[in-house]
Image 1 (cartoon, rainbow, N blue to C red):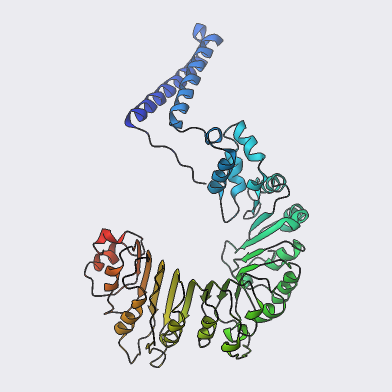
Image 2 (image 1 turned 60 degrees about the vertical axis):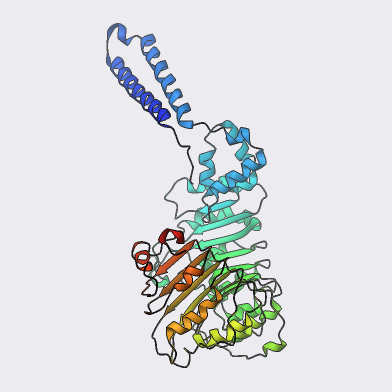
Amino acid sequence: MALYVPFFSPKEKELFSKLEEQRVALLSQIASISQATGDEAKPEHIRSFKNQYNDVVEKKINTHRGPLSDPLTTLPIELFILLVKEIISRRDGTSTKDLLTLSLVNSQWRRALVSEPTLWTDIAIGNGLKDTEVLPRVYTGLVLSGNQPIHLAIDHPAPDWREHIVPILRPHASRVRSLIIWPPSSTKLAEEAPTDDVTICEILRSLGPLPNLRQLELESKYRVNELEFTNFLNSAPNIRSITGDHLTFHQVNNCVSHEMETFTTFATLDQLLTVLPRFSRLTTLILEDLSDEEPVFRHSNSSSMTQLPLQSLNYRQSPADNLPKLISIAPNLDDISITITWKILAEVLPLMRDFRLRNFALYIKCKGPWEDIFQPLDVPHFQGLKSFTFHLHGRQDSRESEAEKVERLFCIIRSSISLQKAIFATDRRHISLEVIRTLSNLRDLTLDAIKMEGIESLSCLQQRHLDEHAPVSQFGLA
């Protein structure tokens, strides 16, 4: 939890230092008097020094608070609650611990925080039960959140899961709206994990049916058993988002609700093109690299397919032969991250002419002379593009000049007035980044493993600011 303190003037700092000196001196005197005999040791004499000490400490505390007013008494209660939510917001669900800390400010803060159940809805199961406060925190969050939907984060593996944690959580299973299971902190693979460690499937199974679960994120180092995971999906009929772990084509085709809005899958694009039209609300699709399962190729004619509501696409598979089909039926895409060859990219770009892209990330894979041809019929210029990422690595075995292809591609961002963030990563020589000079509003520039020529001032940038963000104007590029 990050708390911010006000800046103090030199005069205020000097006063604070003097008060600290007085406090230390009085504390030393009190210690000496307590060990003395005679009149100095009389209780009233000691009490007098203690009162002086308390007065100094009170002044010191008031000085350290600075000129800021108590937000609870200054702001409307609704705004105060919103500010607290912003401060305690944590993806891992540790906000309960932070709330308990804030409740110690004073009795007014404690009453305000305890009486607002929406503040206590992030429930975290820490890394085991070594911390004796984990269970009380979990119980406190479950009670003070009332009947509000809860967001559950589990640091896997979780020792004593069966004995202590499950009995507390299970009565609240119907309130779970989102569930995150983190990977083993040791980052060991499944076969290296302790034999008594609870598996992800056991965690899912022991929670029982989660009828109101909407979002599931499995940040696992190893795959979930398909049969058990399929059974879990059947017990969570309202789930709308699955990320982290990757659905198989069988699960996408038979087990996942057609109301899904986001999912990650290992299924091939050939397979998905046959079933994606069923998902009328799918806005985010992540296609991971292929699994060990045998692909079932089912070619389809994209001209007869229904348009998809997709807005975000993360494509990491190879090959990408059917990617143009998907692009052609997803006209609402505004966030695209794809791993692709030059040849397929030349087919895809003309299909994106009318796209209103905000974020565009390209990871070019060089595979061979015929796959490295880049001769698009059209290279669109994306007026509203905010972020552009370009990665080019691998062997160079092309009939075309690499520099010419990159220059042709960079037409999509040349002279852009909307682009604010750019990332360039390549191991190629003789590639010019002259295009940077044309980006008037570029604010964040990241260079990774750059060996580029053409702008002399970049050599300083790549040495001193590698992988750092800084205003372009700082380096004389704008």
